[in-house]
Amino acid sequence: MRKAERDSWRTVGYISKPHGLQGEVCVYSLTDFPERFARGARLSLSLPDMPRITLSVVESRPFKGGYLVRFAEITTVEAADRLRGGYLQVPIEDRMPLPEDTYYIDDLIGLDVFTDTGEYLGQIEEVILNPANDLYRVGEILIPAVSEFVREIDLAARRVVIHPIPGLLPEVE
Image (tube, rainbow, N blue to C red; front, side, top):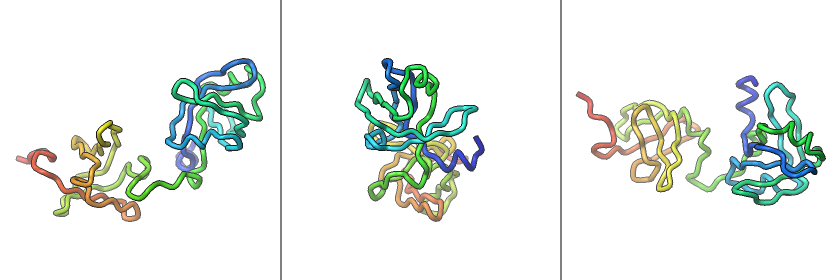
């Protein structure tokens, strides 16, 4: 898959295996929006070395931390087995709106990070999901994603401004 094509889709689920004999599949959810798997939802299937196809959800129900999903186009266990390992995706323009001051991880990756005194620290390389709060990794620096440290996120300018407290940044000799 070319980079431009990959950048235009967002993954919402992963098909792990077939379930039963009627074409149902086990889907591991990769989204915070369960309505992605609701009846009538249309999802694009991405599998290596296969053309992208669109699938229509007929039915879904929670199952072991994920969902059992039946698609209109898949009616046999053999057809369902061919979906194993596939990623369910939506076009980037169909992403769900987020509450204010909430961001998609892929929008944060690559943002330039500056201190509130103008010192450039690098780019956000990773967002680490943590129970207490997420962490933005900038090189070896871990920045808690809380308002005490993160003062501004400007997606249009592709920059983040932080207020470091003593001990947050490595000491420079």
